[in-house]
Image (cartoon, rainbow, N blue to C red):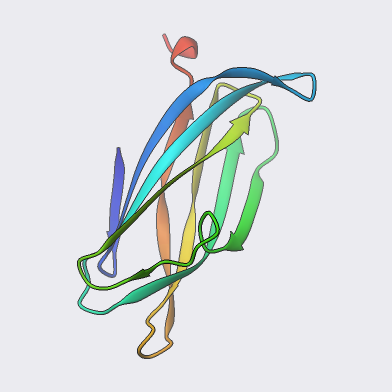
Length: 128
């Protein structure tokens, strides 16, 4: 597990290798990750958007941006958590992901960036 706290927002990530499959006639390695966002600050926050940097050792860096996470823009009062799972396909059995979320304080409308810590993606069969 990888964890980081920034401005009272704790981001925890658990990555997993799910297996190898054929996608568009190419071998791909499927990875999932579960992210828990915990508001440890004293004010409510709302997640507005995400920005991902996906590194695959066999491909150029991929940037993915979007609204919310898995179709929602969770509002987190102090002490609340939101967890979700998602995934990606890599050509290589090795890669990594990192990025950031944009949050807003719904009381003041102030927006701020919270980093998503770098986490490694690796298939166990490829490790020595």
